[in-house]
Amino acid sequence: MFGRLCVVGVLVAGLVGSLPALAEPLDGGPPSTVVGKTIRHTVQAGEDLWSLARKYTLSMDNIMLANGLPSLSVKTGDRLLIPTRWILPGTEQDGLIVNLPERTIYVFEGGELAVAYPCAVGQGGRFATPTGDFTVVNKQEDPIWTPPSWSKIKKPIPPGPDNPLGDRWIGLSADGVGIHATNDPMSIGAVTSHGCMRTYPWIVHELFDTVQIGWPVHIVYEPIKLGWSAEDRTWYMSVFPDIYHQVPDMGALARTQLDKAGLLPLVDDDLLKHLVEEQAGVPTPVAGSDVVIKLNNQRLDFTMAPLLRGGQVWASGEMLRSCGLSVRYDPDHRSLSVMHDGDDVSMNALEGRGQSFVPLSMVLSGLNVRYKWDAVHRTFLIFMKTQQARG
Image 1 (cartoon, helix red, strand yellow):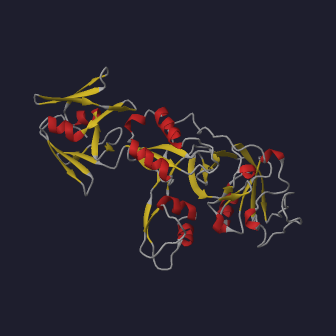
Image 2 (tube, rainbow, N blue to C red; image 1 turned 180 degrees about the vertical axis):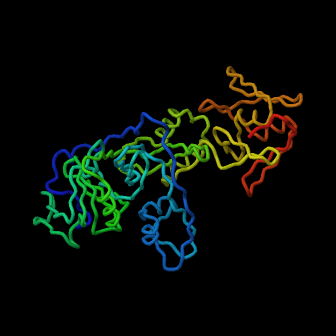
Image 3 (cartoon, one colour; image 1 turned 180 degrees about the horizontal axis):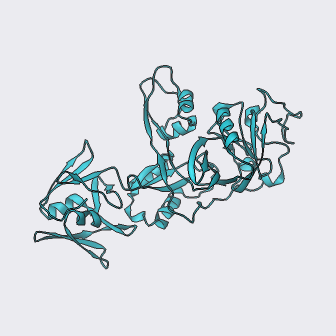
């Protein structure tokens, strides 16, 4: 029972009101950034979800969601995706951002992400963790837990193994709410507390030594996140469970975010439906892909990576021009005309972020240009004579 109680002192009226409203993403700057890399891990003898969560500084819930696991059980030889890639919720010079559906604490120092930690959050209803802009107001080692009025426990719990706050407390300007250690570390990642954010004891020690009094703490509610990876020039989306049932239609929210970013026409409907239904919390390419395009064995790079839709590679007008092809866009019909050596092909284009995309194989076939798809290396090879090609 102690591990399910996390509010210091009496639970005040400000904490037991309505559910937190959907938070607007922190904006005013460039698109959210994708950082980190996912890992493929083969389960070894003696390993379980608990040991893997500690090994990769994740929660068991993180790994279960990413792999669609119905239970805590894994067996030797299982191949698991380890979700160590994140779409950042924003930036701070120094401070914390907590995304409740993601159950993750982001620590920023000097405007850069320092680390991301898993946490448990409020269980919903009257105990939902509040959203808003707060500050760190106090820090305490070996805190004494004073049971709130609703608790069946009436006497304060001194420091020690029975204290639900563990040995570190970081108090916020939200009354009775803080970040703390726990005597129930296997609960990390769950929607289970009475309003606070708890995390692994060794993590809280790091946080305690890092954060300063007065640091900002933004608590947001973002079940769907959209971010840009400059490394592979691809847009990613991650979808998390709507833990507080704040979103009437997750699909509509996803489409709205994509539309605001100018990406909706580029995203495959089936892929979007899958992401919304699966809610695995893993950043997934929605506009762009890992497909490599090579002209005469020379790799081409573009503002946005090629799309992969319906089993076909879609290339931008920018990419076609880089091959030395003549490209003309018709805004009235939203089509691209591509010309090469007297041949001309025209087709409807997908438009987004100021670019137009067309199926690459169809264009090249219409222009009698030789090509090959290397499925093993996910590379589209184009063979043509041109003096104008550029990478």
